[in-house]
Image 1 (cartoon, rainbow, N blue to C red):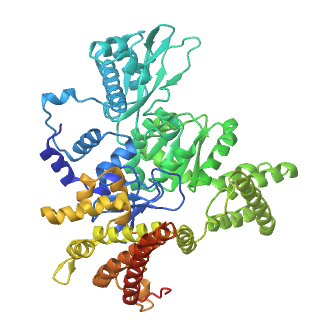
Image 2 (cartoon, rainbow, N blue to C red; image 1 turned 180 degrees about the vertical axis):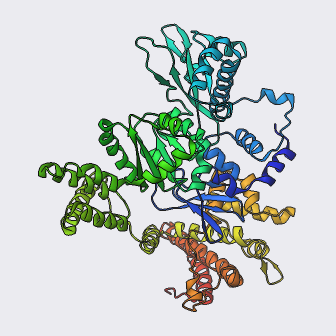
Image 3 (cartoon, rainbow, N blue to C red; image 1 turned 135 degrees about the horizontal axis):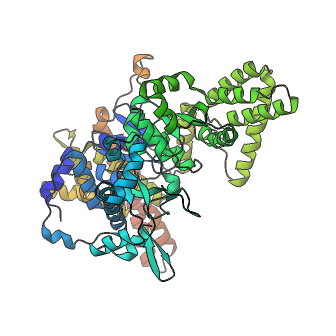
Length: 640
C-alpha cells in the first residue's frame, strides 16, 4: 500500500478550497465558501466548504468529508485513486513497493487505466507510425493544429486495422472483456474488433483530466461510414454529463467570467488556437440539463456561437431555451454566413476574431427579437413570434430578469407592456399547473433569500420530532455538535470535552451513530489523543464523515448589519460556550429521564403482579423527582 508518510504528506498539502475549486466555482460566504451542489440539481446553493476545518458539506445530497472524500464522491474514484490524483496535483512523489502490484483494482479503476492506455497508444501512433504521420498528423497540420495544441488535447490516430489496439492491449495484459466494457472494441457474433479504425482521435476528459471516452473522425470517403463516431456509454462515461473542452477551459472560464458554447471538437480546439480558452462544446448533441448544471458550477454566463446557417438557427434557438430555464444568462454571436468557429478563426486570426466576438455579442432575447422582427409585417407571424419570445422569457427563473426582458420586448416590438405581462403570466400559470399535476405535493414558490431562509426554517420545524425517542436523539445530536466544534475550548479550568464526558458518564446514547462519535471522544481522553474534525475524516465511517461534516458546517450566520447598522449585538456561541455546554448536559439528561419515565409507564401498565407494580411505581416517583429537579434548573414547567 501507499506508505503512511506519503499519505500524510498528501494530506498536509491539501487545500480544500483549491481541490473543490477545480470542479466547482466557489463564492465566499463569511469565513466559508458556498456553491450550487455538484451532486444534485438545485437552484439555491446548499454546498459549503469550510477551509478552517478542511471539509465540505452538501446539504442537498447529504454528502460530506475532506478533500479526498470529495474527489472520491465527485469523480467516482477509489481511495487510492483519489490519493494518486491529489499526489499528482500537489507534486507529491509516490514510491510504491513492488508488492503493491498485487492490489486489485475496481472495475471503475480498470476502465480509467485502460482508457489512459488507449489514449497513449493513439498518441504514439500519430507521431511514430507511418500511417499516423501521413494521414492523421497531416490532417491536423492542415487545420493549423500545432504541437502545443495536439499535446494540450492529447490528440491521436487509430490505424486502419481491425484489431490493432486489441492485439496490442492483450499482449500487455489487458483483458478482452474490459476492452469491450470500455467501448474500445465492438463485438459481432463470436469475435471482437477495434471500434476506432483509420480515424483521428479526440480524447474526452472529465473534470479531473482523466480520459473517459473518445470521439473519432474519418478522413477517407467510405460508403456507410459516419463522419464522426463516439465511445458508447460506460460506467465512467455518460455523454449527457460531459462538455468537451471543459477540463482544458475551466480556469479560463472562471477568469473571463463566461463560457463560449460551440458545437464540436474542432471548434473548441480552433478557439484555443486563437487564444480563446473559455470555450466548451456539446459535441454535436442537444444540450442537456446535466450539461447546463455542469456549466453553472463555473459561470452563470454563456455566449453561444451560431454558425452562419439560417436554416438551423431557429432550431438551435429552441435548444437554448433549456439554458435559460437552467438559470444561465445567455448571449449570442452570429457568425457570417457559411462560417463556423473553426473556419472563421482561421480566416480572421486571433486579434480579429476576439474583436469580432466582442462587437457582435448580443443578449439572447434581444437577438431573438431581432430575428423575428423580419416577419413583423405579417400579423399572424408577428403574433407567433411574440408568443415564442414570451415563452423563452417565461423560462427564466429570476422574476426581476423576466420583468426587464418584458420591458425591452415591449419597446423593441412596440407592444403594450401589460399585454406581454398578461401573456407571460398565462404561460407561467399553465406550466406551473402542469408541473404540479406531474409532481403532486405542496407548492414552494422561489423568492428572496429571506423567503428561502423562512421556508428552510419552516421545513425544519415541520420535520421536528414529537416522540420522545427522536427528541432524545435530537439532544444527543446537539451534544455531539458542541463536542465537534468546541471540544478543545476552555470550560473554566478544563476543556469542554473533559467537562461533557465527565457529566455524561451515566448517559447511554441511544443513536448508534452519535454513540460511535461520542465513544471516540471518550476514548480520546483515555488515550491522550486529540479528537477533532480531521480525526473523524481519517478514522470515521462514511456515515460518521457525513454527519461530522454536517454538524461542523453552518448554513446560516447573523448579518453584520445587526451590529453595524442596528447596534444589536448577537454573541457568538463561543462567547456563551460555558452556559451552552452546561445547559446542553442538563437538557440531554432531562430528555433521557423523560424517555425512561415513558418506558417505565409502559412497563407499569403491563405489570402482572403487585410486586412488579410497586417496583415500577417507586421507579416512577424517583424519575419524576429527578425530572422536576432538572426542570427547575432549566426553567421548564412540567406537569406533576
